[in-house]
Length: 85
View 1 (cartoon, rainbow, N blue to C red):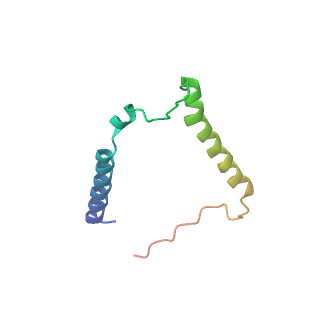
View 2: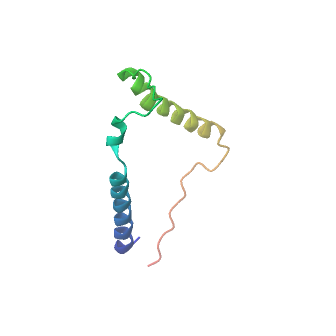
View 3: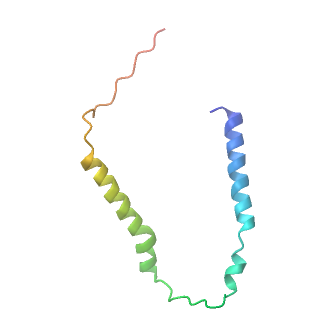
């Protein structure tokens, strides 16, 4: 990718991120709605288990299944072709 396309992609990503940050309003989370009934909060251990440990376990299970169920026979890296001068 040349520099012009990289700059364009970076500007688009930065602009999109900035617009999303400006459009979201965390202050609205402070006002309670009618019928709002929040449950008890999570402890630190519960939070780490739910948002860190559980995704790592799911990733490990999927990666293990892919490795176990992979039936391809070509395991050697391909040799690089020699460049002609």
